[in-house]
Image (cartoon, rainbow, N blue to C red):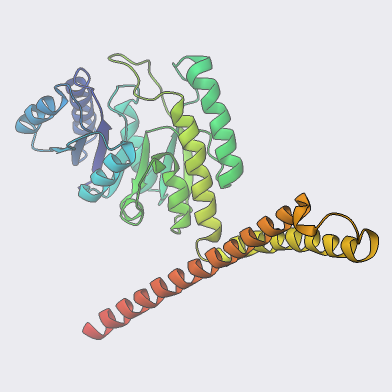
Length: 316
């Protein structure tokens, strides 16, 4: 199979038939074998009934229905698990992504051996102050923190080599950072392609301003995991040392002041510097403990992986 088109959706009953017909026409005209995977993320409207009808008419249509709304990342993960095509293409169900982009996205992966081709909506048909401007700021921060030079992390239109989606796990709200997850997994041949963006034809957007706040938090999580997942003591140990130095400095100052400069003054335990020293030294110790626990957990996991590899090798 050439292509698996993975489409997560929520309340898009009005656009599904038109989207399906458009994709089917593009695949037929380009002589591409495909499967079309719709993931209904707990839609309360008639989206699932539409998907069911489409699958009865077209054997290339598959449907996955969630019992409730779990989010776009979980929907994509479910679609990736089911996908069988050599190239996996993701797109939104609101008709703002054009299926006419599919053949070129496919050939960029198949013929040029790219790992990911990420869409870039250079010209957007969204409200400037509520979507375009926040999106520009978000993408700028994502580039700076992740080190990946993409203009549009949020674009849902992307194509992936099959090995990429089978090697990563998309969870939480990490769908924005699938290219970053792929880089962390060793897939670094990523390019960006300008794609057509269309005005929404049916319904309304499912994302508000909170997606940018959640996006920044997820970005911090990815930054931490990519830099310190293999060496947690380097992060927690550094913080522990800094906190301990601050606490020890205050304690040393209090001791000198009491012994040599102000022996008849207030008790050390009555001075605010004492509580600062005590608090920072306790926090520093806790950071050290967190680092040690992280190293122990990491070592335990590595031992299990080595045992699994050894057992698998012997069984062969």
